[in-house]
View 1 (cartoon, rainbow, N blue to C red):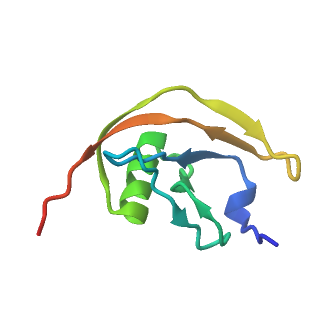
View 2: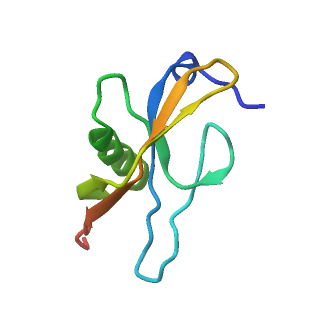
Length: 101
């Protein structure tokens, strides 16, 4: 069973990224909190721009730096359990390439 913290149950902007390499393979990672494999996901903190949250989450979770990004669309959801809202916004992003050490 998934345990939600209070931050999960309030209205927020959700973020996620589909990251492909040159072969078209999609990056997935094990979600520590929920215990399943997923694309990188997270949420913007209250008052934080979605673009800034996306850049921060992707860097923290994947060690990838986004150079620029552009919102494609957005969609609002309402959770039936507690009627909190979640807005999701897919972005097209350009990444900075990591230099080899």
